[in-house]
Image 1: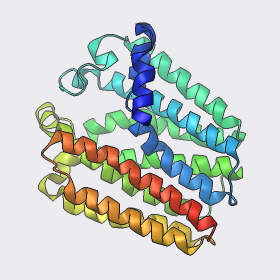
Image 2: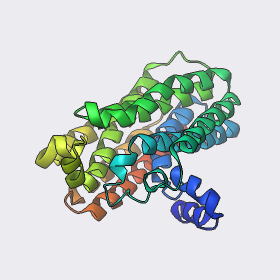
Image 3: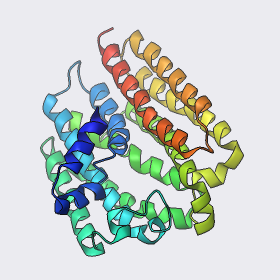
Image 4: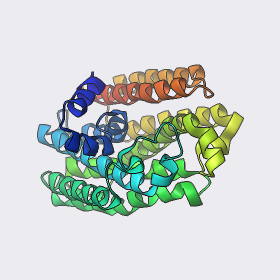
Length: 298
């Protein structure tokens, strides 16, 4: 449903606007959801039974803007590589639809507006988010200099946990539960990005770009299985540091079973299977969020 809405917004927009919506990947909302969900885990776990609705709206809007800025920066850095990969050759910067300067201005504008939006929750939240920006900018370069760029991406994606914890509490003094969610989100990123990377492994090998697919090769599923255990374990440990009820543990365990089943079923040599499994990872995130909510009432 979310994909249909996002795609509809893009396709019905004027051509001059559509290019920028494509640049921020508004037609592919899965990335926004994967970035936002660990943050929502933090908001709900850090709050009383019902978090402030304004806080939820603020972090959701900011997630779209931050991720949109990250995509624009990524596309500028990767424009030459994207032009050589079938899946990415039509991206606005790689295809020349949007120039490098305009793409960077668009990224900066989104990043600034995101900070202003987060400041509505409290100024500390905006400052924590701003501290993550240099790492967001650095990520595209990791594919060239670091053998395991997904590990760096995991740290970047999970940075939305402390941002959202601060949005809910007004404090950057994080309890152990926040660190558990950060770890759970980071290992989850290693899973879905590891699967995602198998779509382009032959292109990456020929071009010389590094990825989890090339690093782990035939052992990918073994490594991702370990990350499933660590991701679910991090979330469970986070809950154990609070007074959350029994339903949380049961539902998170069920989410872990789902995540494991996705890993078993995915065909890493079939790009469409990798993409479908990448998208299906959002179910895990939503179920964990439901677990936190249920745990507050049991």
